Amino acid sequence: MALEKTLVLLKPCTLQRGLVGEIVSVFEKKGLQICGMKMMQLSDELLSEHYAHLSEKPFFQRVKDAMMTAPVIAMCLKGVDAIAAVRALAGPTNGRNAAPGTIRGSYCMSFQENIVHASDSPETAAVELKRFFRDDEIVEWRQSIFSSLYANDEY
Image (cartoon, one colour):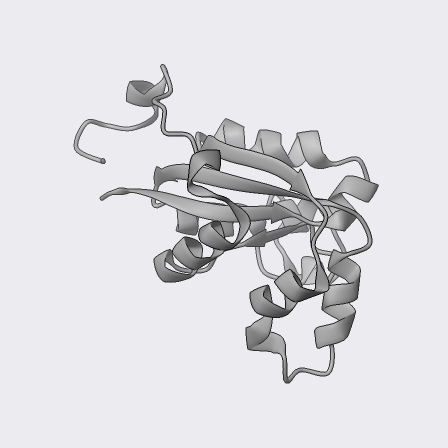
């Protein structure tokens, strides 16, 4: 198993509801390492690129509009199987269908206003991280608790 990096966006609804600290805490308590974090106001152009896979959907513009109502917090998280771990913590897209204990199951009732965006594969994570972070904004460092997070044959 290898250490992976993944992108997480804390959506405008998360900032509007004052949940940033709680959501970041979920990832940190799991043992995921923050390697990059910044607040940014997303543009229509960036969102058109980011959500290009939804461009033919009737809700495409609504999603982009919602993502521009307030800033987002972009994070690069790192860990063994980080992509799958983040997606398991997030829960399914529709908060009404998400299990209690997941981020969406605990904090949202919406398909759209669903707290976080999380990369869905290593390929997507690589593209998305480059979209939201310059190389010098992702910091390589080793947590002092690293050996307490994993067995030595897990990474």
